[in-house]
Length: 207
Image (tube, rainbow, N blue to C red; front, side, top):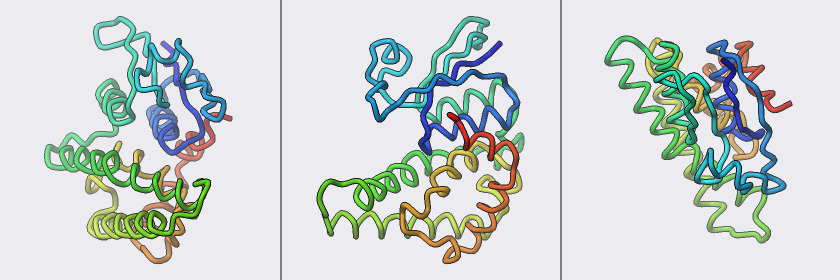
């Protein structure tokens, strides 16, 4: 059955469209225009209580009945469990994938989001904030570079939900004033993922 994807063209939204494309699951896009505050619509609130995209509704939930989910980490783990894909079967790599997924959710996403805000969108210039979040973005890219210098993917040898969660944020490296050439392992990984057809299709959602 067709999954309903409530999304917009943000890094968080693109995590889920990439996963759905990689998993070849049928889905229908329900665009939620956050520039028009559509995320505050009462109908969307019933699906996503935190008024954030993305969210999904799967008519074929774990017990065969409909399930609605918000929060990208939960959605990615749900889709991986539903299909038996994008999480390694090896226990050590499986835990590695989950820890790097949590790293993305707790650091690489929120801190880069702050960099986006203060470097591009803040209505006034705040030098302290710009410096703070630029430095933190660079530190996090260093963490990512070290990991990807040890293994081809964040989990190890397996492409996983951790890579899918991290890629759309790295795709906005110009917004963060980050040159990927400064982080050669990240650039190698980034170029490999960008060349995947499912990633390319997922990054184009919503049209």
